[in-house]
Every structure is written in structure tokens, then in C-alpha cells.
Length: 69
Image 1 (cartoon, rainbow, N blue to C red):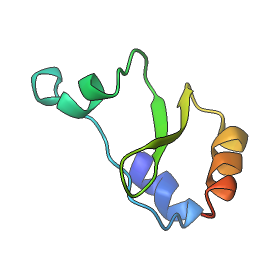
Image 2 (image 1 turned 135 degrees about the vertical axis):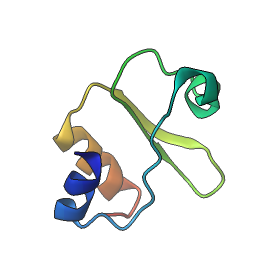
Image 3 (image 1 turned 90 degrees about the horizontal axis):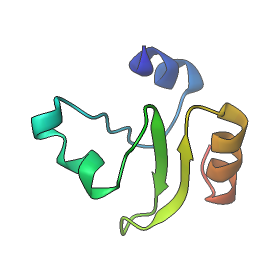
């Protein structure tokens, strides 16, 4: 479902998904408390935007602010 959305949206950035809890170190590192939780990171891993749930308009606004589409 996520891959289909990414393809339809023609996103040009990397998407990282979580995995089984015991292997989900990325989610633990960023303090994920709910699903979905979305982060927009810069090249250095700095959090530019974080959103719990899915609000496409907010995500697209954050992407635009970061110079992405």
C-alpha cells in the first residue's frame, strides 16, 4: 500500500518503513509512539518535520518547505 502511494505520488525521496518490533531500532531511536508516524529528515538526519497520523497536506507543505516534491 505504501509503495503504491509513493509510486502514484512520484516522490523523489527515500521512504523507510519499520519492521518487526525486535528489529525496529529506527522507530525506537526516533520515539515513534503511534502508527503511522512520518518524519522528514535532512541529509544529516535532522528532523525537519514530524507528524502522527497521516495528513497529506501537512506532509506536502513540509516537503515544499524543504525544497522537495
